[in-house]
Length: 175
Image (cartoon, rainbow, N blue to C red; front, side):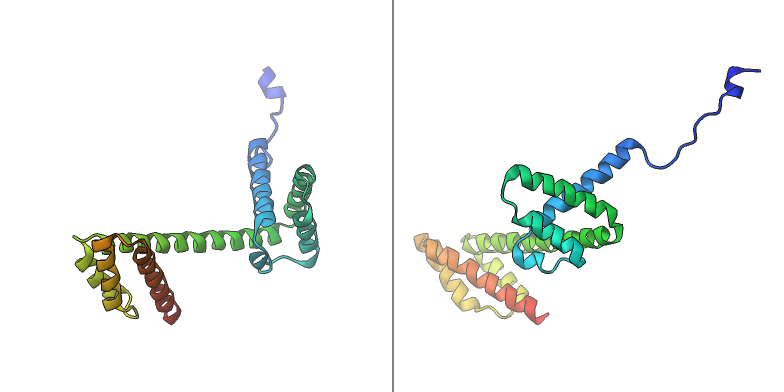
């Protein structure tokens, strides 16, 4: 008989220790995000009353060490409630996606404003704006663009962006 035949090798049972640590760290990240949410967003989080009390307690703590301990405790509570944690994580991911879309729209408007304020690209950019944002006053925008072209008017530069953003919000509300 060989030594290997006599000895029974242990069978793999579940995730590795590293995988468990990564999962625990991910739940801690969720707990930290919950503590940093603005009050208006926090009110929309899908959490049962018991979990909401734990999160409220952690959000009220101001001392750094105590807040960190409470966050670890909150992560432990979240690990015990997998369904609620999954719902909260889905909610937070939805917030991230909305934030990313808002940031992209903001950068698009900035880029459009910069092209309008560039004398060489202004005419083409105004035509593009007219197609994208039908609610905007293109004549007023062109007048502001000329003020930027001739006098480097910073107030007109900012006003162009404000008008683009207002027209974009109006168009988004209509959709």
